Length: 98
Image (cartoon, rainbow, N blue to C red; front, side):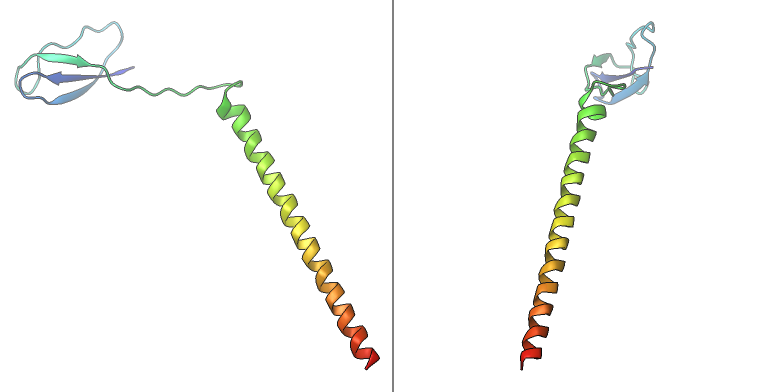
């Protein structure tokens, strides 16, 4: 059921009411008896199913960036390990020559 907002012209109180589409609009304020005016408010909705950015493309972009991040981390860790091994082998060969 939709939520409708009404504002009282007399006391300026804004009231939210659950109403069916078939229900008549309210005309009298329950607080002071003044005249109510129906307000147009922002509504939200959620697009479900496939074919929407949130369900298809957003997840793909996240997985692509995560995979790229992992490959960059693997490459950088592999490079740092191999450079460490090279430094160790150079220092051991230098000390052996002394």
